[in-house]
Image (cartoon, rainbow, N blue to C red; front, side, top):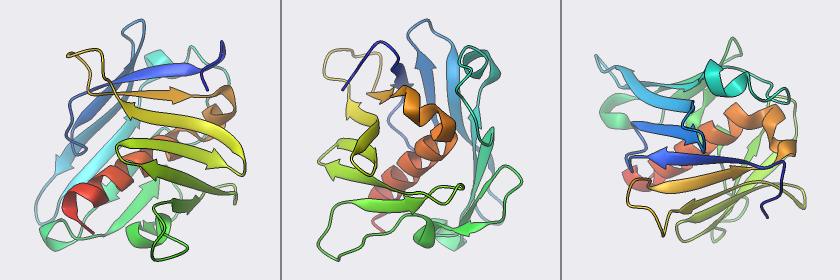
Length: 173
């Protein structure tokens, strides 16, 4: 899966509500943090300029806001200045028994996260855009996210739906 044009991001921390991704040179790429909690939790996923400026293929919104309902129930997500999208409608299963979760990008393309245990693979048709897997080697990083060059145009959506899938798993939605 990895190739010379792939971007490798290392995740610090295992909490999907508060995570940081950095590249192999230590540049911060994405930050997920809580920005409010009264009356409900609000998280911001921010694509960091030091990393994004290194990659001309990076496009799309610089941030996504996760607005939760009461007791961290599913709420909605806003990408950049786009309209709000319900969390349940943003990431869905086509069949009840399926472990894959689908999402429609802002450009209208249907993509999916194939889930196999802790490993997740983001697909656009038969093309792999990104792979997320626990880091089996390092004790410093919780996971590795490898993004193919073809995934950079939707990288914020890839990371946001990855984090939403992880949050949904933790909260047992």
